[in-house]
Length: 434
Image (tube, rainbow, N blue to C red; front, side):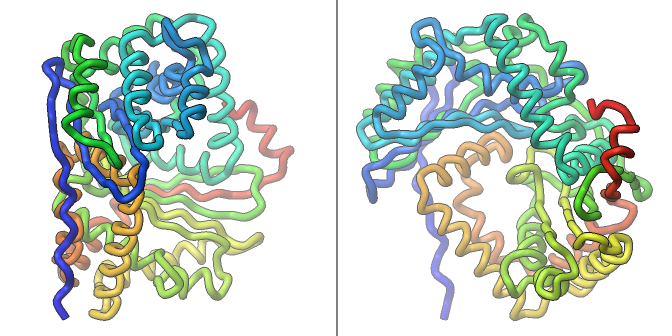
């Protein structure tokens, strides 16, 4: 039986005179709407001395405007029956409101108010700086895998901004000034650097009129400076050891890989699926099911694919007292087997179906569709890859898997950080963690 034709998402595109891009996708299956604004700025746009300012500014965006005191934005959205949040990545900073149908103008009013009249003052900066520094301690410094990942990225990338964590270095967070924040806001939080995505139960024509009313008078700004950073080819394996208080040893490894626009990305997706998705995956059958590891994962990109070449990451936690060196050798043996021999035809057909099913299951959500549309626009240069994604997976051959796998999963193309458990006394003897 021939496979069904891929679903076509009927996205409509408009552009305001100030450069604001509006992408709409109507879905009247439920009385809900997701309003999202994606700014084309993330940790990729930072520099040494200002690392973490993108994520810090995400927090600042919730501290009120000239006409909305702190917490009022959340109260307004929640009173309407909706939810709101935000996230920062390497390549974008995004804000969203998921609302009942008929309430989309509330989101427009909030986001245009923040874009035009955000309150940026010393008191808010001081408060949110400490919140972010504590978040860094909790999510990175105090967790073995988080700290190992941070070290691995700084080893893998010599010069590209992907080498520092999205949350930033603590030494930079401590000295970011109010003027830094004001300059950052002026340059990056402009309509011509943003994409608004609206998905759900609404009418595009009316929404565009409302968008023009709320955003049309906000002036555009000069384009942000381009990110210019050349990452030279790696010419040998890089290794590091992290001595950390931990219950078990482990390792975090990264392999240089292309960005999201690269034609080989669908093959990378399928390799990741074959290794880790479900109980029939190779890593599950070889390592998790027999209890040889406590956790194992493969992740491509840095939260979806990236604008610039990034990585494929492999993370492993051994059982307490496990021989992590022996486990690592076995993991690479399994990866090499797939990279050089490929999959059986049955495996290849299965992982394609798994990837397609996961994509369409997530696409039942207005929020997920909006994130796909917005991030593809920023990272791939167009949302249209959403309509070709399934077909690209279907076209991947076993030869493609072997060609891409053998190019990426090379010893000379990776950085590995081993987690070596130590006592609290030894950990503290190294001095402050920051």
